[in-house]
Length: 179
View 1 (tube, helix red, strand yellow):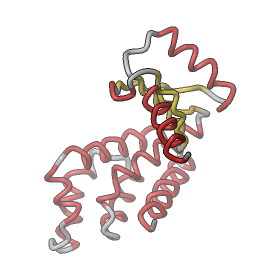
View 2 (cartoon, rainbow, N blue to C red):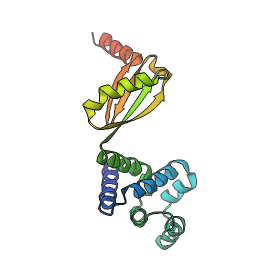
View 3 (cartoon, rainbow, N blue to C red):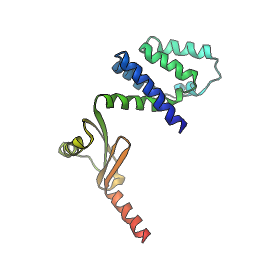
View 4 (cartoon, helix red, strand yellow):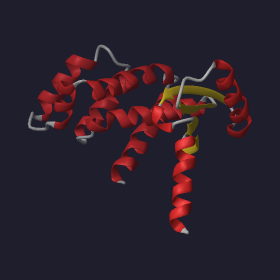
C-alpha cells in the first residue's frame, strides 16, 4: 500500500512539474527509458537496491550516467528518488507517469487479449463499441492467450471485462459448485 502511494506521488509530482515546464513529452521519453532499464538490466537493479555505496559516490555514478542524457527535471527527480532509496520503483513510476500523460491527452489504453489473432475489422468493432463508453481516443494493445479457449478479455485502466470461453466455463463451474 505504501509503495502504491509513493508511486502515485512521485509520478504525479513529476508530471505536474513537467507540464508547468512544457516538457512532458521529453520527460516521458526519459522516464520510459529509465523504466525499461530498471525492468531489463540486472546491473541497474543491483545498483538501485544496493545502498552500501556512500551517497556522494552514488550521486557521481548517476551524474556520469544520466546528467548529459536526461532533461534536467528528470535528472533532478532521479536524484530525489535515489536519496529516498526508491530507484527500485522506477518501472511502476514510469508506467503511472505514462498513464498521466495519456489521460492528459484524452487517450485510453485498452488491452485486448484473445485466444487467437483478431483481424483488423474485429479490433475496429471493439474500438467503436468502447470509444463512446470511455471517451477519448483508444490506444489498443493486442496479446494472445490460447488458455482463453475462445473469445477475448479487455483491460481498460483498472477494469477487466472477460468475454472468453474460459471465463464463461469458470463462472459456470462456480455456479454449479454454489448449488
